[in-house]
Amino acid sequence: MKPAILFLSMLSAASAFAPSFLGTKLSSGLSQSASTTCLEMKYTLVLVRHGESTWNDENRFTGWYDCPLSEKGLKEANDGANLLKEAGYTFDVAYTSTLQRAIKTLWIILEEMHLMYIPIVNTWRLNERHYGGLTGLNKQETVDKHGKDQVLVWRRSYDIPPPDCDDSSEYYPANDPMYANVSKEDLPKSESLKLTEERFMVEWDANLVPLIKSGKKVIIAAHGNTLRALVKHLDGISKDDITGLNIPTGVPLVYELDDDMNPIAQEGAIAPLTGKYLGDLDKVRERIGAVAAQTK
Image 1 (tube, rainbow, N blue to C red):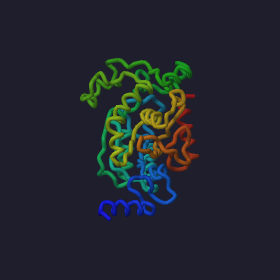
Image 2 (image 1 turned 60 degrees about the vertical axis):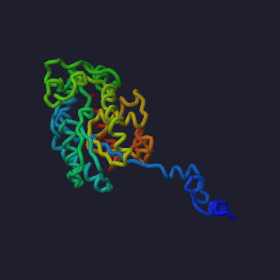
Image 3 (image 1 turned 90 degrees about the vertical axis):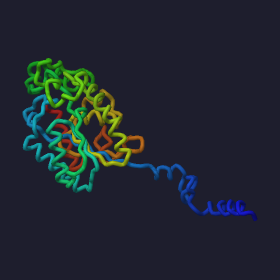
Image 4 (image 1 turned 180 degrees about the horizontal axis):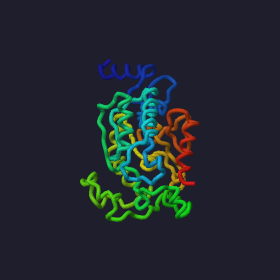
């Protein structure tokens, strides 16, 4: 028998018993679709809203104002770090905003986890939603003055921003040297959640998705509205439903993503999210309710 024919005969006989590297038969009784699923990658992404800030404590519209963490916020950041450490997470790269409350939260987490050596990327695209002319105002006093319905429109509607701040305002980012290298056309005077989502998704698509797909384990420490924008995208939450979603401070939110960056639903996830909060979920629900109660 010629060598080529002998080789093909042996290969044909072996295929009945051995795994095929062509994917048609990986093992006895295992279908092609099941074997393909086994080969799919799974990526972990951890999100953390910064701990309570001093202006959170005073119930003010904060936005891009660079206030520090409160004493409670420092503890929340430590608690979040301990949850991540106890669960065995580790990270290769960290992303955060240019605002100190998010940066300090991240620093505390990385210090507690002995990960202060990993790269940290700061970007203004992860900053909180800009509250324009409402920045600095007490939320409840604003309700008393303008009415709950109007404030809820400003605070929670998807595509209606609050009134702009003035060009001369200390809260206009173009007057802050921190943003001297950002095009003035990109700097907001006020933002809706829709506008916040649009400016953050530029960073997500261009840099974060390729980074995650490369196999890097990423943690994002950011703000309530930038994280709401991200989970809206990940979980396909409607613009009507996202207005009622609240993310608590300091609690790690863990997503498992497939090759297409679609979330894999986790047991214990609090709907409409498919990512899972770490820690006592009853306490997490209480903290979610506390965020919603800031304007009564």
